[in-house]
Length: 616
Image (cartoon, rainbow, N blue to C red):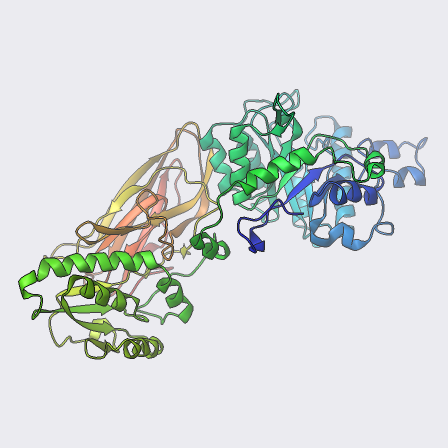
């Protein structure tokens, strides 16, 4: 059964815990012992006896049919297909002693043959995943070659989890291994050799002594599919003889569960016959399962904002381009539910009205406010509420070019009896001739620029490797037309020494925006208000990921390119992954270019706006 839920009735917040078992011939009893009696959700079990060696089968003195059949666990005749494959209840564990890069030819060829046999058997049983052993030593080229052949085989659709240790213990490495090697480097070398195949993922083998916090955070940006927790890590209290995890391990497990990673308990062999005979007797692994479950249940319940974001975390979305396309009803719905954003607009308009109209003139001075991109009326409502709070008179022009949205906007205005103070303008603001001068201009920011394969995304499974740096600042209105709107900036990010090596896939960008005086809105992490959820970062990828080592400098260049008619303003923040906000301006076309020059060089992306640009 699941570890628990972070919200009553929210079934998709369930998290799961499995168990790593030794080899048993009787897979039926294995499932009964660990899943039925132990309450685990799945088993990670070897499908072949680990003492089997194909080189012995080639010996004519021991070669016979029974010998060839002996190493396998029960077949699909004795165990129903549903038990093998349904919901991933069984994960195949490949023999841990395999050494496909051994200098001993017999060991290497035996390892290759066994790997192939076990993968074929798991595929025949329609299993969803296999756990691969940790690479031996510092070289894994032949191991990666064999796995790559499997991944790119015509019939493979299984997830292959490579067991990667994090932290230190006495048995982390073989005698010829270098214990000082960062396990991330082993993983990175392996996945590069396998051409970043999407079916190759990680099972983190968590050790007793964990690396520094920054080093751990790297793994949140990697394709981790499970975490293995040995029973030796757990501690026992002197009083009560209760089992518990060290604090750092508790935090790590809680973070992994928050990132939807199942936990696998490993380390204790349970005799299946004894456990079956015990019946209702408490399962030997139950204290460890209970502790993992407690770690998850102690997490705070999901907020309303987090519940909304669950389905869109790390989901790539095309940026809105309101001057080129009409937005859908879903886009307006998402914007309208972000109450914090409109509360801040309301505060800004309140302050602007109080500054503009003194109390003694409030009864007869009418302020003209233009809402650009009125949508379904959320910003109009915030403006009128600000007028009510301050006791000022307001006349509103609601400019909206989307004819479908205007229908909904008209209904809102009539329903609230605003027909005498709110006037709908069905027009593109660039071509609208206003009948009178606006005192206040209100515009809800939208992402209207996208770059070479750039997407809006709620970043979640990411590793943020360095703090944000400011790139461009633009001020509106711009009083001098001769001032150029082209921009260039070179930035240098230092990778902390306790982070270790990492692979940079791109940049995430954020903005800070001042609405009026001290009323601000921001998506940059250090200044963002937690309840602001309708504006997500923008991800600007590098066509080829770039490796950075600890203590190294990542040097990146950004250009804002315009033609002779371009006029505009921009407030941009870069967070070691990049994002852009562009306000309303009279541009005809604009695009951005960027590249990396250290520690290695990348091509200049989006040259001449060849992939993406913004036209207004």
